[in-house]
Image (cartoon, rainbow, N blue to C red; front, side):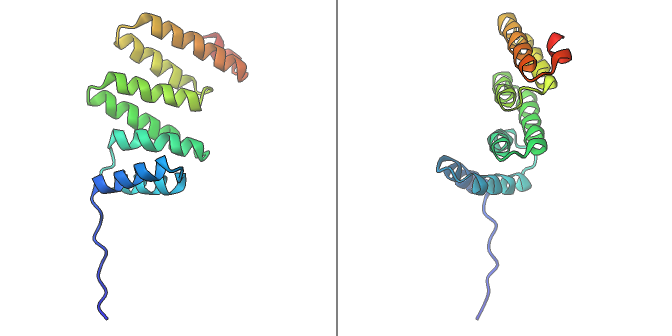
Length: 140
């Protein structure tokens, strides 16, 4: 009997399979597939953007924060400021106690010349930090 080596799947097919798994609620499988896609192209911000919320749902805090940061910086480097803001908004929804995320969100809103959105982010961040008992950071 002859054994064949399994041909590695193309990155696009792996990401599509991850998307299907995520839409069906199979979080573990989606995480595994997105990680496999990241092995083929480690700095892909769109895959990091899909992976980060799933990691946050599985309570993998450090990995999720790193993935959110990689997604936001990758989108920013590619020139997609609005996408970077969107990723950071997802990050602060999952981790409202992370003051650096709020600061980066405000910075990007100011880069977009959206001062009212930046002020709104500051106020929302202060309120969320105050509720989580991070009083010193909330006052800033």
